[in-house]
Image (tube, rainbow, N blue to C red; front, side, top):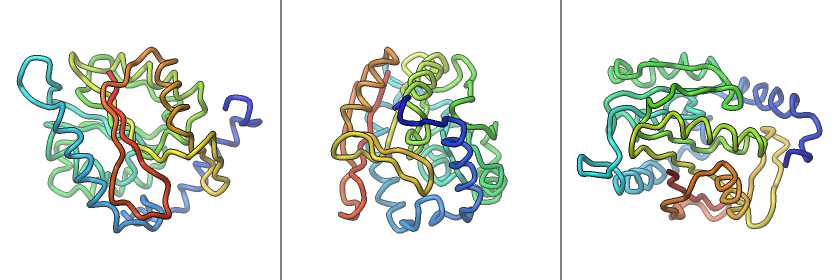
Length: 222
């Protein structure tokens, strides 16, 4: 996609401008599909639980990172119930400000709110058991996605995993002019993960979403 984005700067600034206008609500985060939030979270819980535990080789439950966290929908329902502490990163300051109230009492266990685009974000080395990247890779160019995944890999604790959960197109790369993002097909996502030097250890499709939206796939990387 590198070449498809003629103007990388506007690809990012247009997305920032789009999100600045989105209300800081669950419905806003999900583009009007707030009603799918529970199906989404339950699917993610089942997925994550396969990896977590105290036994040898299992992923720890110390600290997780929520990438493109928005107001903290995933942090609140998925990550805080499973991890001791969580960090949030999002490009929109208003969402992160809202997260502090949206997360309520539990916000005490959020250690960091990073306001930056993922293309510029460098997670702390060896800090995270799980890095959760949902509905945000479409905002990164191919090269930036590969480099971000490589930085994420360095940020993992022993037995840590990176999880990508996102829309996949049926074929090729489909641009979305509205929020200045792209949707890639599964083979392209896999090839970018491989380019980053990371392997996919598990993959599944999220079921029970409305028929009219893209298929959503979840990949665990290590």
